[in-house]
Image (spheres, rainbow, N blue to C red):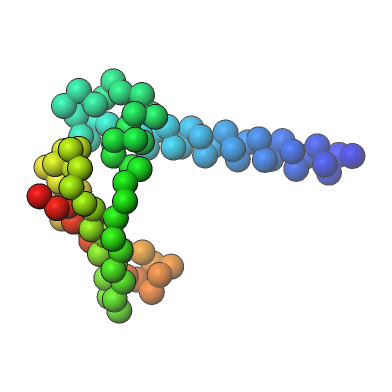
Length: 102
């Protein structure tokens, strides 16, 4: 009985930690983008900036993520997300390259 209750509380703790972490990441995104987006709800930030279709091309060294035309993509490109590369160690150290259509 104690083992079951420990697993349940662990699950709740992990769920809560993921929720709090995601909320903080959304707030950091909103502050980076600025232009009045700091006061938007998390759902609105997700809908406008995160929930987007993209084409992904993977080669031996890079992963290129090309986002299509959207009204909010210029905010992301203007704030340094367009040229920002990130290395993914667990994926054979490939780097990601986001790009936005103009």
